[in-house]
Length: 48
Image (cartoon, rainbow, N blue to C red; front, side, top):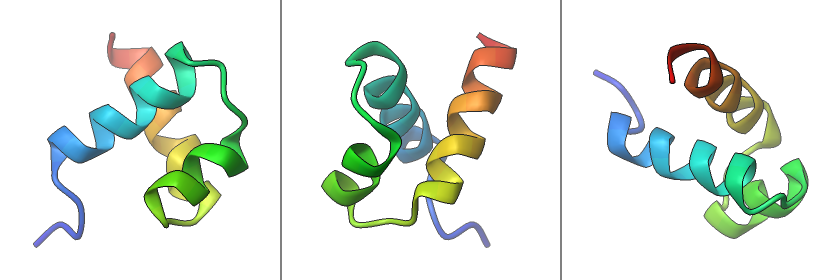
C-alpha cells in the first residue's frame, strides 16, 4: 500500500513546479522529506 496518494503527490509536485518555491520550502510546507518531492516533480514533468 502506498504511503501517499497519487492526488497528494500531484499536488506537491505542482506546488513545487508552478509556484517556483524551493524544494526545501515545499517539503517543509507538507512536512515531508525533500527527496520524494524531487522524485514526484520529475515524474510529474515526464508524464505531463
